[in-house]
Each structure stands twice: as C-alpha cells, then as structure tokens.
Image 1 (tube, helix red, strand yellow):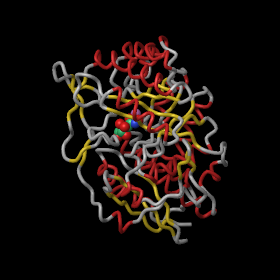
Image 2 (tube, rainbow, N blue to C red; image 1 turned 135 degrees about the vertical axis):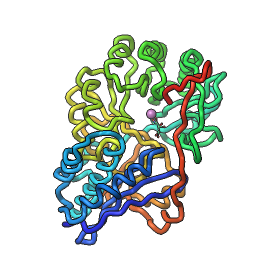
Image 3 (cartoon, rainbow, N blue to C red; image 1 turned 90 degrees about the horizontal axis):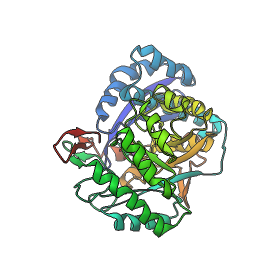
Length: 403
Ligand code: EZ4
Ligand code: CO
C-alpha cells in the first residue's frame, strides 16, 4: 500500500483544527490530528512544506520506519511543532493499517485490556457554589470522575473557569486575552472548594484539579498537603515541569497523587519524572507526543514504575485525536483515566466518529481504523481564524506569569 497523496486541512468549527489526510493507491484514506492551540499554522507549514513531499510514494505499512525517518531523519529533534507533525503522520498510518486489516485500531495494538474507558468531566463555576452545582450536574450526566475548578475571590479571570457560565474554552479570537493571578488568594481558596464539593457529593466520585503550572514547588507541596483530606484522584501540573527535580520537593511533602505531561512531546520529557517515581499519572497525548508509536513507548516506561496514563483530552485536541486516544486507552495495560470535554455540535458534524459515551465511560467503537472521518465540504465552511491562548500576569505588579 503506497501513499499517493497527503493533504493538510485547516478548519475552525468553533476553534482551529489541523488535520492530515493521507491517500493510498488502494483507495483507503487515513487521518491524523496535528492541532497545536495558538500555533496551528506552524504545524500546517511544517507538514505542507517539509513532510508531505517526503510521504508521497512511501510504503504506508512501514509505520515505525516512517516515524524514525521523520524524527531521526530531520536531524532537528523534539519540540511541539515537530512532534505534532510526526504525530499526525503516525496516527494516519495506524488508521490506514487498521482499515486495511478491517479491524478497529485497538486490535492492532494488542486488543482490549478492558471493557470501557473511564473518563473525567470538567466542572467549573465563577464561585464555589456554582462549581458545586456543576459537579452535581456532571455527576447526574453519569460521570464518575470530575475535575473541579472555580473562580478565586479577588481575581478577574482564572484558568478553567468559563466567562459565559458554559463550557470552558481557553483560546480567544484575535490577540491573547490577559488574565490575572495571585498565589496566596488561590492557595486559601482551593481547599475550601474541595471541602464544599466533598460535602455536597460524598466520596464515591473521583475528584481532580488542574493547577495549570502556576505554583512554585514549595507552594505546590503546601497545596498537596492541604488537599489530602479530600482524597483527590490527582493534582495536575502543580508546578512547571521543565525542571523535573522540582517534583522531588513536592513529592517529599504530600501523598496527593500528581499528574503531569500535557505539554510534553517525547519520552525524554517524562524520563526522570517516571524513573524517580515523582508522578503518578502521565498526561502525554497522541497529538502532542509523536503519535501512537511514541505514546506507547512512554506508557511502557511508565508501566515499569506503576505510573498510569491520563491523557489530555481538552476540546483543542480534535475528534481525530480523541478517537485515536480511546483506542490507545482501551489497550494500554497501565491505563489510569482519559480527559473528556465534549466538542461543540459543529465540530462533531465536521468529524463524524464511532466513539461513544455511556455512564461515565467511553468506547472507541468497532469501525475499522480509529473510527473518525472528516467531512471536507463542511470543514471548508469554517475557515481558519487567528486565535491565541491567554497570557497570565501577577495582579500585584503585572509580572508575566505561567498561564
Ligand atoms: O490548557 O488544552 O487539562 N487541560 C488543560 C487544557 C489546556 C488547553 C491548552 O490548549 O490544561 O485546558
Ligand atoms: Co491541564
């Protein structure tokens, strides 16, 4: 099976998605997600200008060799743009191979390790009362695991909290929005939030929280300790992870489980954190960590240290990524949980898919391949719109902070 064509499709059914479509001499097509929030066109160019010319004429069945060719063969390694582009090719090749075999992709990975995939929902509100209501609403929808985020008194815009009282979507059209931040206010507030949530919902549901890289290691240690009574499933991105040693300090002080990795691109970003057992969940995802071929390598390293997977699954990863991720999740032996934010109706219409939600769990479906397609005519009705993620500044003096 030879690759005869490769096309990059950029569309914006509410937010921007970059999709790679491979065509073959057998008439089969394969899809891969290449979306990188706020830097979409860089990946589209990397693919169009540098990768597509390498693909045409290649043997589509040589997934591993193509991965190595694009990674080692580029000389320039790693980074989110490179690894998202490689991921798109890799995902499309797995899709093709599974379609050629007439099997759902999870069968090629080794078959199902479980019946269904545990997912967690997002609940957010402008204050604690609103968040508690939203947690209860998500529980009523059937979710067993729920991430809770709330506005912080005295701060205008906080990560994870919708401004319109609906779904949280961080990217905004035009130039980046500015948010403000104050660590002492946040640290006082979050334990109160989880106290209220546990009082309202009890102990049957798993609860999660995303710190979104805002704390220093000792502050993260403090928050982890303060949250111990509420038995979180995880505390996410408690401190930036460029310096993995920072997590030693957090780990030394708290038994709250730690999750990291949604912005990691390769196993090298994870290596020290996993080998030193500084984290409990690795959040690398198909699109930003080099595709299924590389994600599998990360998961296998993690398994040696009882670190489980918890892949990123925000709405800025397209349904193509979600479909591929669910096949991975159904197979991967050391599965932990999968993030799930439902896409809007327009996105679901552009990307028809076989995956489904039922009572707190998802399943990738039995369609051959990863089970996600693109309606190109519909996608063409939603052209690219410039959009950025927000930036964050300290309320006190305007210093640029981690968003
Ligand atoms: O900020 O996907 O856990 N989920 C997250 C997301 C990320 C966005 C960035 O594009 O942290 O909301
Ligand atoms: Co996150």
